[in-house]
Amino acid sequence: MGLNYTRYKLSNYAIDPTNLPGFDNGLVNNLNFRIALQRSSIDQPMFPKMGSNFLASLQITPPWSVVDPGINPADNPYKFIEYHKWRFNGEWFVPLGKPHGEDKNKQFVLRFAAKYGFLGRFNQNLKISPFERFQVGDAGLTNQFALLGFDIIAHRGYPVYENSDPRINPDQQRASQYFTIFNKYTMELRYPLSLNPSSTIFGLAFFEAANGWYNFKDYNPFQLRRSVGIGMRFFLPMFGLLGFDYGIGLDRFTPNNSFRDAARFTFMLGFEPE
Image 1 (tube, rainbow, N blue to C red):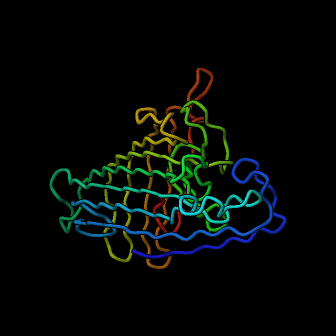
Image 2: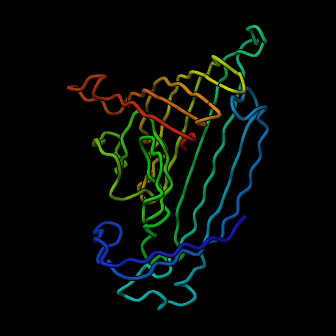
Image 3: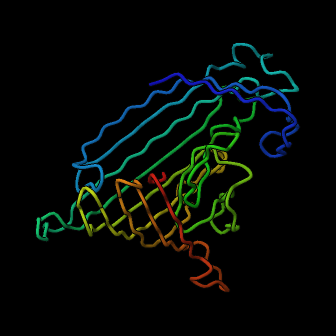
């Protein structure tokens, strides 16, 4: 639970015709309250073998335009941002077979995960805030330099995308606009190579499906981009997390494409992306 305030000052900012049309000078205020509820029953943080983890959160601003319709002048429609942002993350870990190895601590583990996000508005006469949306695709190491402040939702096997049609996947590193709704589902089969506290290493094979939308009119929870692949994770005290994935976007195939054209190699450092 927390109260957050972010203030942006734009001075001769290069106009963003998609997200901030005609707006290059002025102040933007993002005052929001966030509450989160979490429950975890996993047996260990580095390589969970059993249990589950759930997180539900709400981030909300005051309904400025409802209280005062003239609070945002025509030359600065984002002076006081307003939105309500809902998130849910859930994951389950299921051990397969009996433990084996010298210490009887090695076994396959199946991980299931489901993640959802929605960004809404109070005033139906206004557009949904361009701030605090969701970027979906790739691994996205950071967004700390992004003016709009978006959540990064990784999707192995795909570049960052901004179209809800799974067949449209231009090779790009970032999107020109971000989604207001997303769904993501993951299934991983993991196996530990080393469970030493000083070097936890495990391999994995995954199936992943995700997509994003801009409004409920276009929302289709079954219209997902699918991918499969393999990866490795290294938890080292000196570096934290190091991760590598090789994913193949199944919906990137066309009759003239090959596996090489649909595959992507992604790298992660410091933390596991959403």
